[in-house]
Length: 92
Image (tube, rainbow, N blue to C red; front, side, top):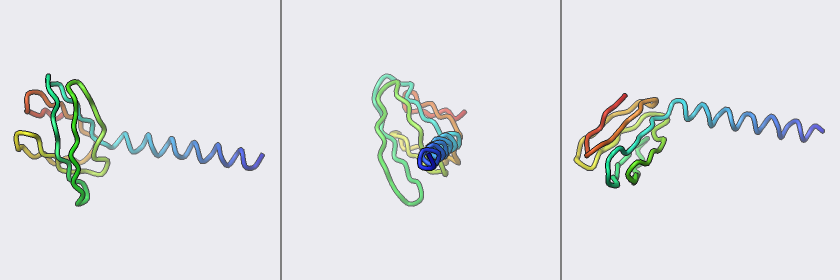
């Protein structure tokens, strides 16, 4: 019984941490008609993120810089909602 209670508690903690991470992360949506590639630099690590038309993703839980395909660079703290359409970003 103790093992079951411990497993349940660990599951609840994992769900809480995942939910908390997503609450502070930025959300990015490609509102355009074609796929885009964003370059994300977070904590010194660089990653290219491809988003198909209409796709969304959660990024930058601790803040980051993103570079759009047109060369624009945005600094994010986390928690923002970014919509990208025709190469232009709108931050909400």
